[in-house]
Length: 84
Image (cartoon, rainbow, N blue to C red; front, side, top):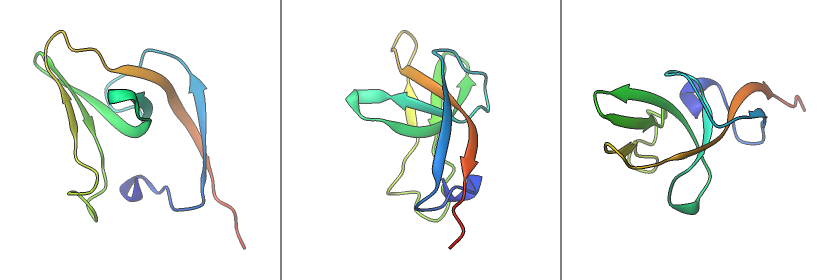
């Protein structure tokens, strides 16, 4: 999530909850794998956007069609950068 200011080695602080608003940064569990994305509702679709312009092919958006469930595990409330 380089475009969100999250760098390798950072700690992401997450509040556990199953609901999120459009634009929140969330931990989701599509296909049994954790991912850090931003949900956006587009008509009948939920899109989990990657917001990593540097590596778009490595971190593609995830699209859930109408009726498909994507488990949201929590919402990011902070990021800790360690200065060395």
